[in-house]
Image (cartoon, rainbow, N blue to C red; front, side, top):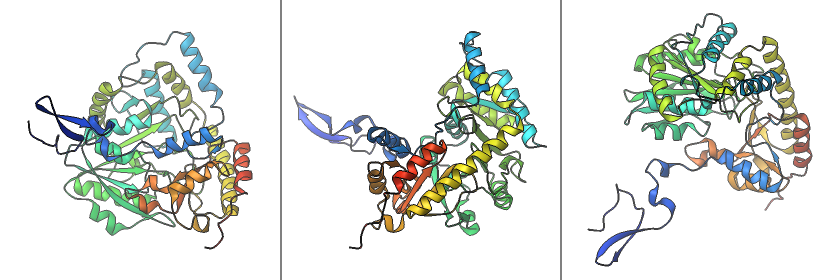
Length: 418
C-alpha cells in the first residue's frame, strides 16, 4: 500500500508498522468529511457559552429572556395531559397545518395556502432551510446568498452539495447593487436565499428589490428560498412576503417558525410553505431527516396561529421600545450603526473602541470586561476579514436585561492613542 491521500485530503501521517502502511490521525480530523472541514461551529452559539462561563449579559444569541404567550403553554400542557405523545403526521399535524394556512391568508390577503399540499412542518426553520436545499439543489448548482448573512446559510448550501455565491449588501443602508446581483445569476444558479427582515442588519427588502429578484429568478429559472422568521418584528418598513411579489408566486419556498414571534426558540417547531410540487420534495427529505416535529408542541403551534392581530401589534411595539433603548446605549458607548427597520439585531461598527479592527478578539474581551456578549462581524461574511470592525448585538430581552447591559457598557471606553 503506497503513501496515498484519502479522497484528496490529508487526514494524518502515514507510518510503516509490522510490514504495512497505516494512517495515524494528527487530530480528530481523521473522520471529518470534506464538507465538514469547510466550516466551523456556530460563532453565535459559542458566544453564548462564553457568556455563561463569564457571567455576562447575553446580547449575542437571539433568544428572548421573557415568557412566551400563556395560550401556547396551556395548549402544550393540555396536549401532554391528553397523551399527544406519539408521531404526528410526518409533514405536520392536520390542525397545525390548517392553522398556518388560515393565519397566512388573514395576514396577507390574496395569498392562498393549501394545508394539504403546500405546508411541511419541520424541526424549526433551521431544518426547513436545510431540508429545502437538500430537496431542490444538486452538486454543481450555485446558491446566491446575500452577505452579511445568518451563518447557517453557507454551510447549508455546502451540505447540500451546492456552491454558495455571495452578493454584498452595501452599508450603511444595506442596499443591493443591481449589476452585482445580475452578475451572480447564471445557468448554474439553482436558488437564491432571501432573509427579510434581515439578520444581522435589520434590513427589510423593498417591493422593488423583490421584483428585481423575481425577474432574475424567472430569467434563470431559479427558486427563491425566503427566511421570514422575523415577519412581525417590523418598525419603519412594510414586510412584503416574496411569495406575493410578481414572478415569485410559483417559485418561492417561505420558511418560518414559532421561535421568534412567539418567544419559544427552544421548541424547534417551524414550517415551509411552497407550491405542491416543491413541497412534495421537501416532505420526502424532511421525513428522513427528522421524521417530524414534537407532537405536543404542534398543538401549541395551533394555538399560536389563532392569536388575534393585536398580539402582533403589541409585539412590534414592545420590540421598538427595546430597539430604541439599546440603540441609545450603543450610541453613547461609541458604536456606530444604522437603526434597524426590522428583526431584533443591531449591527455596529466599533470605530475607536477597537482600533485594531479585530472583531473576534474584541468580542471575547467584551464578554469578560465589562461583561456583555455580542457576535463578531466575522461570523456574517464568507471572508471573515470583511466583518472586521463589526459587532452584532441582539435585543430580544427584558428591559431590565438591556439596562443591565447598559450599566456595563458605560465602563467601555476607547483605548488611548498609541
